[in-house]
Structures are given as structure tokens and as C-alpha cells.
Length: 168
Image 1: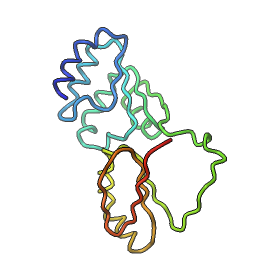
Image 2: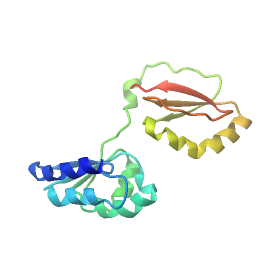
Image 3: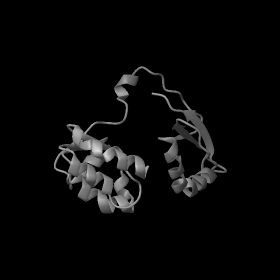
Image 4: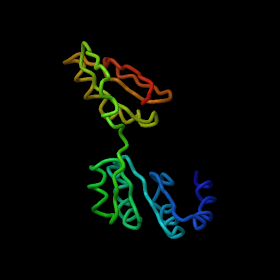
């Protein structure tokens, strides 16, 4: 990853703008991002997750986004945080428009459903609530519905986990 990023940097000045999504390298300060900023006439940063809650990002993200020409985020919560550091923040919602699904019949479930949807590499973050879900399962019958693409392993013991392949 480091090598591919390093080999891409010399190409940046040949474009009208650079679009950075998430982070370009997952360790240390935002060195590649700042290098892109120096090389690109316009820099757009696209973020649809609250990565600023991770200590490394909380430390380096404010300085980086303050140099961006535009920060594009997926919701108002992200915009509120980014607007403290970036002058130009736009929201492009990352969720489907629920209006498109009017008329779809709701199914009644015999037990409550707690839903999680996301990238299969992020399923591991459900471990953060494993204990709480286990305690809840001892008190009340419910289903944890995990909607994602790809394959993953998830064993929550007494929690009923239902795997659902992602689709719009």
C-alpha cells in the first residue's frame, strides 16, 4: 500500500483536482494526504464515517481537512464536526432515499430486530457491543440482523444472528 501510494503521488499535479477518500495510509500522520494537498490545485476529501472518534484521526484529521478545498460528508452529524475545521463542507447522503421504498409491505416479526448494515471489514466493530447484546439476549428474545456483502465470522453465543446479503 505504501509503495502504491508513493508511486501515485507524481501523477497528482496532472489533474485538475484530487479526491481523497478516507485515509491514504493507515498509520502515522496524514503524510500522503498532505503531499496530495501540496501537489494538487484542488483537494476534495470524501468521508462517510465518523473516523474522528479514533484517536489517530482525532489528532491528524482537523489539520488535514482545514487545507481541503471541499469536504464531502454523508450526513449532518459529520458535517457539524467537519465544519469546525473545514471552510467548505457539503452533505451528499450515503443512505438510500426511503421514499423510493414506499409501498413495500412491511413484514411483522415475532421478535424485535436489531439491524446492522455495513462493509464486511467493519463487522468486527460489532465486538464492541458483544457484551451488551449478550446481556440483552438473556433478558429478551431478539434477532441481530447483519446485512453486508462478502463473508465474515460472527459468533455471539446466545444472540440469534441472522445473516442477510446486502442489496439495495
